[in-house]
Structure formats: structure tokens, C-alpha cells
Amino acid sequence: MTEQQLILIVALALVAAVVIAGLVILNRRKTERLKSRFGSEYTRVVDETGSRRKAEAGLAAREKRVDAITIVPLTPTDRDHYTTSWRRLQSEFVDDPKYAVTHADHLLSEVMTKRGYPMGDFEQRAADISVDHAQVVQNYRAVHEIILRQGRGQASTEDLRRAMILFRDLFDELIGEQVLVGGSTAPNRAVA
Image (spheres, rainbow, N blue to C red):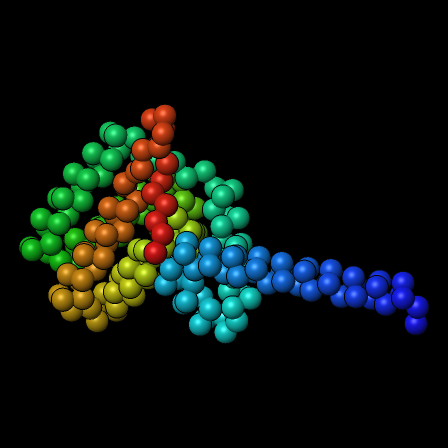
């Protein structure tokens, strides 16, 4: 083996090592970004899929899907209307918890529709919400389970009280907005 061949082999090995190190660093950054953005939803999806790689691909696909959707802030008038409706539902809880929870679910669906979220099946809605509202998507999943139990007549008054609390957190997140520099608004970008 000539000296030039040896130098070429060493140079190629160094380039390969740098490329591999770069890929490892990029992969770690991607993982940390997704963990930061999705919080406990990241862990849930990893556990559900059994694979960090599959989970990250799924979460990245969620981001891409939601980026293609036009999610709009509520107008002040709409926000006031929904806030008033929410307060009315909260006050009705004492007299009729089942009614209040059922109508809170409908009100939340109205808010999501008004904001531009597609209203497909529950899992797709939860996945869409998780992109911008990771801190409350677990609440949405928990509320959904309570609503299903309520439909079977298996939800206690305490379950319904918990549902209203969870609904409130999600409701507050979905009607809230963050004012950006220059006065424009955007949906809150919740980060766990």
C-alpha cells in the first residue's frame, strides 16, 4: 500500500466519522426539539409505538399536517361569546352536571371548528391539538374517556367535575392568543 493510498483511507475514515457524528448530533437535536414541543405526548407516543424512531416520524408528520392547516385566532367578539357561554355552562354544572359536561364538549368542538381544526375522528383531533397545545392534550384525552363513560352511564359526579376542570384548561388554551411583535396574533404555542 502506497503512502497516498494510506492517506486517502485515513482521510475517508475521518470524513465518515465527521458525517456520522453530525448525523448523531442532528438526530439528538431533533429528539430534544420534539420532546420540548410535545412534552408528555412525546413519551405517550413512544410508549404506544414501541419505537423512538417511529414516534418521532409520527410527531413530525403531525407537525407537517398542522402546518398545512390554517389555524386562526378567534376574533374578540367570538372570544367574548365563547367565554360567556363557558361561564354559563360552569354555573349550570351545579344543577345538571351531565348537561354541563355534554354541552362543554359541544362548545369546545365549536371553538375548535371556528379556529380551523379539522373535526375528524377523536384521535386525529387530539393529534392535531398536540402540535400547538401539548400541555393540555392529555386533558383532552382524559375528558374524552369521561365522556365515553358518561355515555354508558358509568361516570360519577366526581368524574364529571374533573371533566369540567379539564375542559376549562383546554378551553382556556384554545381561546387564548399570544400577541406577536407588530400587533399580529397567533395561537399559543404551548411547550411542555
